[in-house]
Amino acid sequence: MAVIRDVIAAFELFQPATVDDAVRLLDQHGADALVLAGGLDSMDWLKDRLKRPRYVVDLSQIKELRGVRDVVGGLEIGAMTPLTEVVRHPLVKDRFGLLMQAAELVASPQIRNQGTIGGNVSQDTRCWYYRGGWNCYRAGGNTCYADTPTAINREHAIFDADRCVAVSPSDTAPALVALDAQMIIRNSRGERVVPAEEYFVGPGIDITRMNTLRPGDLLTAIRIPATWAGAQFYFEKVRDRQVWDFPLVNIASAIKPDGGNIGSMRLVVGAVSCVPRRLKDVETAVAGKPRNEETAKMAGEMAIQGAQPLRYNGYKLPLMRNLVKRAIRGSEGGSWTS
Amino acid sequence: MEDNKMSEETPQSASRRNFIKGVIAAGAVASSSAYLFRSTTLHGQPSAAGAVERLITLNVNGQDRRIDVMPQDTLAMTLRYKLGLTGTKLGCDRAECGACTVLVDDVPRYSCSVLAHTVRGRKITTIEGLADATTGKLHPVQQGVIDEQGFQCAFCMPGFVMATVGYLKTNPNPTRQELAHGISGNLCRCQDYDKILTAMMRGADNARKG
Image (cartoon, rainbow over all chains, first blue to last red; front, side, top):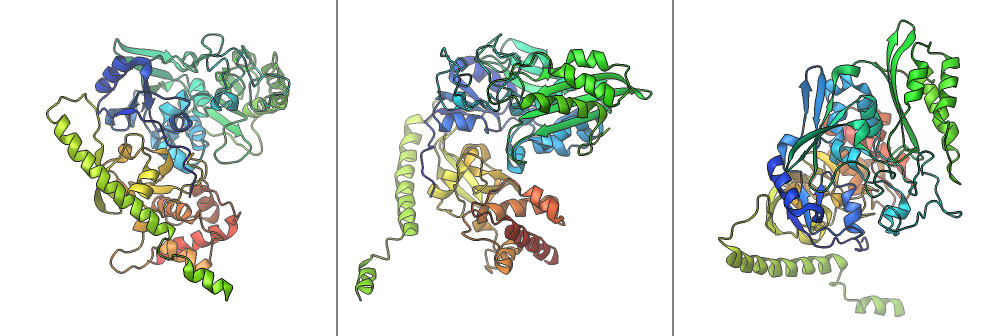
């Protein structure tokens, strides 16, 4: 028998049936409430008793939050749509194969059956010092335990660390930034639409949050415009084990070809900084260039400029450089899909 | 002689299984009285939209079961310690091993990481619900386990079987590679994967033959 050390502390549970009711509950309870989607991030916090919310608002009964809808050539995906449903949906496959590939590579089959796309993009970082309950900057303290001379920081950031060196763990997030998606957020004052690129926030803006959601906010849907539908996509995720693991580095790119050259491109790398890192300089530099080794090499070198590795994550530099090269010229292992 | 004497004095009736059953029965009595008490004191009071009751109905293996569940109870804890369905194992309790896999509306899920309240009204199938209830005939995948002797210690077996049964509903005729990917969310501490996969392929074969 498993040792029962993971009994969750008591809370009051709400299972609203509509978004309106959920928003009202979140407005009423503010920071005392925890939003529960698939639960694969939340359960760890609750079982470790590192978060002890008074109220939990479970979104599982809200039907309007689930499903993929066709919106003038683009798609609107309900935040509570399980990743498996995203992977299997024919319209996702037809138009945004990039998102399909990214969602397929998340964790394990059971987790994809339960984990939602809204939860996948909104999950907290997996830095084990932070998740282990250490009183670090992100937890409100005044130290980063992952950035000391003896810290084990193999999976941490090589870019834009600001006191905290944690990284964004999501696979779907880089894909959604590459596809120029929009996040639909509701609260008691109404609805706002935030571009995926601005949805994620780094430690320089707010060290205690990974995204723009504030207490009372609810991510209801993700809208992907038709802009990049049917482009040539490349997604690759490198991890220690082929199941369960979060990315060491992942990459998502979309290219619209112009003759034999790159017309325009979106290139986003995950797990190298606190937010999915969009490489705008590289995107500009490769526009109009042929997709060959020379362009790939130039892009790879550009991509890692300014990187500041920690003691144990220097390997992320060549890894990221090579993934960028592959995204431009393709690779033997991974292939282009369109 | 000494050994025999020792074993005679061991109270066989106090097996772990019976102990657990006893605890569950005692809990059921205590919780049902708590419910009666609650229902009288709270009757008629307005409740907030979305507020939940502790007494809920779970559909487990085709039966509606009325049980008293705390809001923070996971499905795995509820199945094992409220309903006595100890075939569902708890390995890591963290969605990292797959031993607790059950089917929710025919889809494999980690029961350690879902609240019992979340799956109210859904169809839950555990390893106990696979065999034919009247004839006792094993599910084809269970038969595959016996045919191939696929497991060593078999602690992970219920999870593997449930994951396979769930996967076969979406792909009844998988290649070995496809099935390996389909049940990649389960770990075996004995590292017996090759034999397990052989047994599960045999199970898929059994299922197709009916």
